[in-house]
Image (tube, rainbow, N blue to C red; front, top):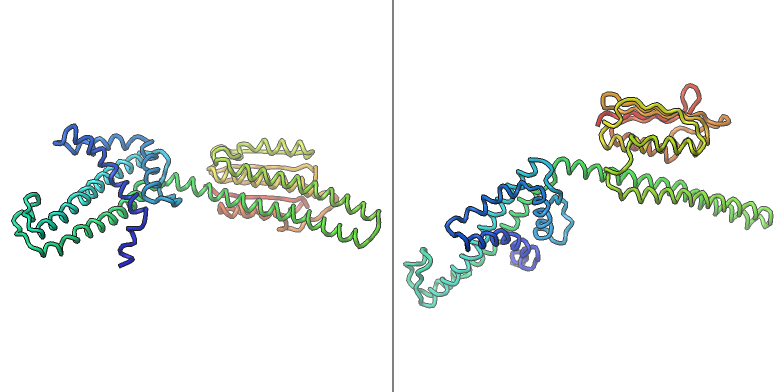
Length: 386
């Protein structure tokens, strides 16, 4: 019994009822003009539904009244972008009008039926409702009086649930909107992982050096050693602050919309930045880079960025060779650089290399990082057509 009455205590029940009543306000106004053609408001909704902004208004109403207090992404608040979206909006408007008419009928006639049953029980005759017109007054009708109210209660709750399901079906995100949301979520996860790696490698390293140097200086009890330790701590701290500023830049950039984030068409900025740092970059970009799908082009930019960052971080201002090739929608990206002074780098180590492999794997591609036959360091990534 408590479970049956629980919807009475929920605000959602009443906001959904309000949502169902709203279309009837238009019908009520029209009835004052011409009550012989009540179908006119439903006909007018057909051209109205093709207006792109109407879909936004319906989505906002659905969020506020059908699922109040919850972040329900099942309702799109974007304007209609395709004719399919417009048609879905029209169908929803007609469905909402129909459900509103049913709700209004339930809320008006069932309470009236209850009142007439009570009147019959009190000895009055009923002439307004056909089913009770020929009924003789009797006290037993008082036992039937609650039934129309219970039916109205159940109908209001059920119609509210039906309206919510219909709104999710017809006002839900389109395929393009779902793809955009997936891209946004993918980008956020990638940037979050990148930030975590940067903080772990940079800040963690700086703190480790500072702790070790401070402990060693205390144990040595030597002014000269302490001076060298403080110098090392200072230099490590400055480098960590620079890395932290770069990570904060990534976080600030993550708030930008996908359409404004850099893609491989902006690769010249990366190349010029690397050249300004003292590295000689030999770059060759072939194929229709601008035709790459958004996710592939954005991830290709990030991969190139991390590859060039690794060159500057681990090899310094050495010559580097960059090759970007687009063929049949597939992207091949390659960065090569010599290792200075015969230095050896263990393949597979480092957060930058992990990030490159993770980005490639996320898009179904392959990444190879490590020395080539000539002894140069190579980063080669192949991404399939999006």
